[in-house]
Image 1: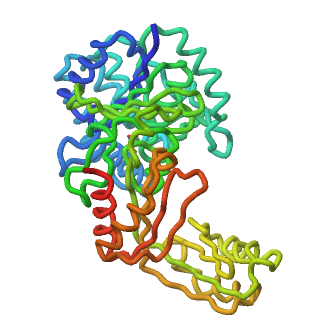
Image 2 (image 1 turned 135 degrees about the vertical axis):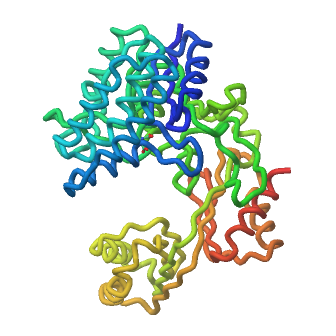
Image 3 (image 1 turned 120 degrees about the vertical axis):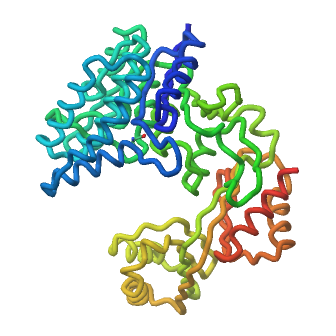
Length: 438
Ligand code: ASP
């Protein structure tokens, strides 16, 4: 029998009713043996996430301000869940001890980690499953970099000793035993790490949406869901702004060849999205998989006659960026031109200095800076096999009266990236969507 590892996000474990739903999901499939829990999320739009409250609590302690009232709100969330599910015995003492430890340790990571710790503890109790503390098996090095191989080895050993278990997401520990967290949303990463260590056949990531959509629903009305996509396609789409899964959750499972299913806790029967390591037949049957984009980029265009034969020209341009700690996104080039696309936020403080450094070291004929650029990535393995994809895309943009300011297509033929005026962003995304989706 295969193993499925399930991660439930904060909205899926926000209150007792959701705990019951989670239990039904887990009990409906005996292969679901390991669960990774997030901290309780928002119950409605106006609500607060327990993780945010824990950071607030830490800040109050740090500033020597009273933190009791904030912690009482956190404790109330857990007591409500525990009482409704009949697992409240001893819980008040656990919460009291937790607060005392937050005050004693004065560590933001320790404080934040208690959201996952307490929720996993409660879920394990409610299910009657074992509890495994991530602190003992998810390891970071002294610099706080995740130690993937060390973790995999010890976690695999630990999981073998349990038939069914719940683990808290989001944190692990440093070599000195101190708690250390991943970045926000990091329980997705914990789930992927557990899936790899368990050699799972499937990593199920349960959230509050039924998978990925082909485009941002705030831009395109009612976009179609994506039934299957590859990790590489997902990386391209999420890099460009599609956020359902933490970016770093891709690596452990991709490398191990384990697919990830994105499922909706509130609608478990919805098919969701399956993310696979290698493209399947279905991936090639459609021309594109999805469209994603970002606003607020700047384009630096550098022109110099005979640039193509000047040794080290490109290096000097990039060196100027590196010297000011700026990383670039794209680098479309021509014969005598080189463009660098940079997010605006990277340039705010250093713009003028970078330009004068490029002038100094590269002596270009001209250098032009223009802001207000939006990038749109159209992604899909299907492009390789579908003739006319680019023609369709650019025709759609021209018919929508959108001026294309930059084009970049990687040699992988997995995406076509176009740069348009920020003001044209929504129109362009809609036009591309309509061109490919009937
Ligand atoms: N609770 C943490 C956060 O809010 C981690 C997570 O939910 O994945 O970022």
